Amino acid sequence: MRGLFVFASLMVCSIVPSLARADEASGSVPEAEASTGAGSVYDPLGMSSSLRSPDLMVRRAREMLVRAKFLDETATSDERLAADLLLRMPTLRKSASSAREKADHATASDLEALAQRADELEADLAVSEAEVTVKKRLAADNRRMARELRVRAVGLVREATAAVQVRSPVAVRADGIRSDIF
Image 1 (cartoon, rainbow, N blue to C red):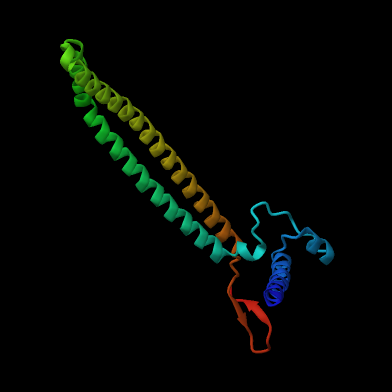
Image 2 (cartoon, rainbow, N blue to C red):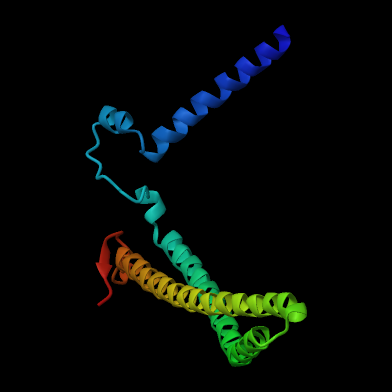
């Protein structure tokens, strides 16, 4: 039992300092920023300057485009399902109304079974109508989210390209002095 306690305490001691060092390195600990005296700017996204490198920003923009494509495909699938359900609706309506008419004009012996069948078809019709509404709304939401992701990706890429400083071509002369080629 004592060996287990020693092992657990060693694990805690080895993990806790590494977590503290990780927090200090990312700059997410306000005390660490205050102790260094660096006047850092609050970053609500939690992205330090190293995470805002152009390469990482472009990679993140690419991931956003992949997610947007997935959302578009999901929206297309939802739209197809809604269209298929809409095609089934007229026949389902006719079946439900004819089953209800049969149940209304049925004799006492068949009334129970025909009424149950009419209730099932009417319930199926109501659920199908609700499903069409939900699928259309989901498709619209997915399209909107995909559009927003594409806009954010373009913004990230523009920010990344603005961050890259393009230097004019420089030539180093024989005496070691740098001069512009142009």
